[in-house]
Length: 367
Image 1 (cartoon, rainbow, N blue to C red):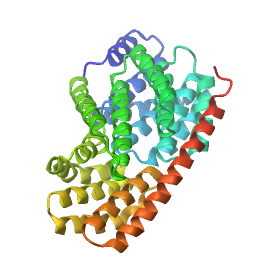
Image 2 (image 1 turned 90 degrees about the horizontal axis):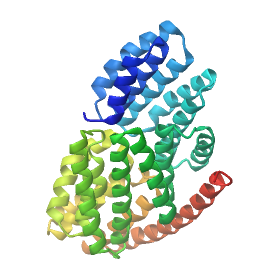
Image 3 (image 1 turned 90 degrees about the vertical axis):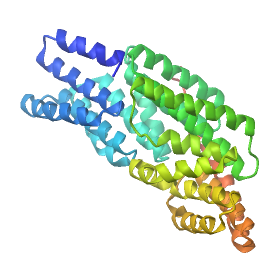
Image 4 (image 1 turned 60 degrees about the vertical axis):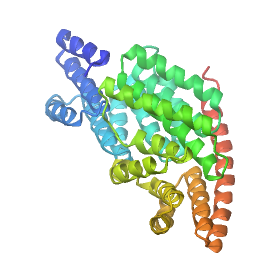
């Protein structure tokens, strides 16, 4: 794995005279391995670090161990189970009086709260972390920038989103963290594809935008290959490429991606989005004159739609199912889903406004 961050940490570990500092640097290195998807290597390193933390009884080292443990969990599956470990890492960083480590742990907690749409907690953590992080804390600032960029994009504020993506990019470059660069590309690609796909579900698809976004998704996959990043492999195929292929009418290619990646996506923390993906596959089957398969997928999507918690996913899924049922000459179901789609879309617009207000309040006075 070619990473300036790992090379820098290797040099710092070799030069460290303080044994405790050396162990903390090793923990930071293990975290870098986890973010690159090298989870077995990260776990092996963490086992030795955990023994050292127990022996030395240092809250700072223990904080690093908990943080890396949480990062490993997060990159196995983007589910909230890592939160307890991040929270423990934050408490230990506070005990150690390490402001920069506190900022980093808060940034990771904010990441999970963004993924779970827990707006008040996320906004409070972002504000506190930005106040704590020193100018050279590139790791915390890159992650904070990523969360803020994604949050503003979700809120529909693309201009501020781009500013925060640039902020995150600058700090990722300063840190030499190629995994963060990969995360930036992934998130931009996935969120852009999601928005284009949402418009298409309401029969407002933009083919030119979809073509551009697909090229960017392919570029992201190529960057991962070059950088050696392998964490969360279903993100680009499902959250970007498959949805864009649906918009572009490349039905069989989209179905192949859904078939290949949907099962793994559920284990990587995307189970709550299953209904949207399956509804998209139903539409593909219908466009390829496979009504039996379309009916099966439409019924499956309807069964798991309640697991979705993001209003944009709910709107897209209901809208897509409305079109599927209409094509299958089941007008009652079509009307029902269309009404739910319109309600969910209105809720999404209201949610976006709420996020814009909360983000503005969180950042007020920080410069």
